[in-house]
Image (cartoon, one colour):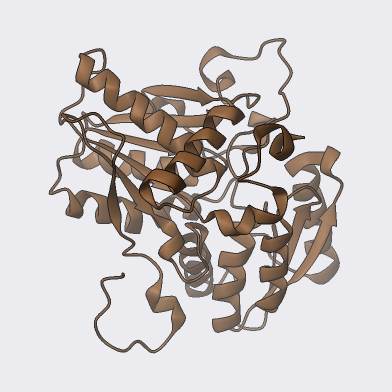
Amino acid sequence: MTTHREPLSSVLETVGETPLVGVHAAPDDVPVYAKLESFNPGASIKDRIGVYMLESMLDDGTLEPGDTVVEPTAGNTGIGFALAAGQLDVEAVFVVPERFSQEKQQLMRALGAEVVNTPTEDGMQGAIQRADEIADERDGVVPQQFANPLNAEAHYATTAPEIDEALDGEVGAVVAGCGTAGTLMGLARYFRENHPSTHVVAVQPEGSVYHRFFEGEDEDAHGEYKTEGIGTGDIATNELFDPDLVDDLVTVPDRAAQDELKRLAREEGHLVASSAGAASVAALRVAERIRDGTVDAPYDSVVTVFPDSSERYLSKGIYDSFEEWSG
């Protein structure tokens, strides 16, 4: 249930104010809370940046009504942008690597957007390059969620204060998965400014190379991983991430993320995807460390984000055996 009690004039007014719900598996003395972003109208956290970024770009003249936005995306950002674009008189084209969820691509098209696929092996860097080419061909604008500060600003302005208000400022740790890093950076900057001792934790899948921000380049190549929406194979594309705002990085294997998303459904009624599974694993681990005294947090509480719903991944066998899902 949302907090809206009066009729609204547009679906865009329903973005945000999502529930914050306790995770039952948390230690008794250190509750873990999850922000349920599937309650947004496009069913993911990316609705927030779709509305915030397009409205900001229209306000500052970067976009004009009738213009075209071209964005490289794994899917949810495309849905968020398409949702906003359709209501704001903006055309939308999205460049999506082939391997990502077909459900997401169908929803982008349903919202009136054009979807262009790029080869899986080219990764997000290939999608970014193709988006730039299409923008040049069509005189479009690339919002570029991986580099645009408006991505993080959306969470600084909306997600973070909602969490802060819900817990009366008593947030011990913030734990969030990093894809573009916009969510975590917005949360981190808000809490660093308002509650500087809040413990900030980034989450990545095993095979991602976010650790290079802390350790520098090394010889390990990034590995393949099934967890969608978080992680990176090339830190050069993740311009928003600021390691100085992060206290720790937790790496979660695909198997642990899938085990947890299944447990969340079976035991707690959360129909969430693999990025939420990874976030939950990490958040519970941080809560245990706070309980055991190995992490110094200002309050005995942990907040994480469940970015979207498992329904977008059913065709990929998200609830099947690990071998079937990951194969």
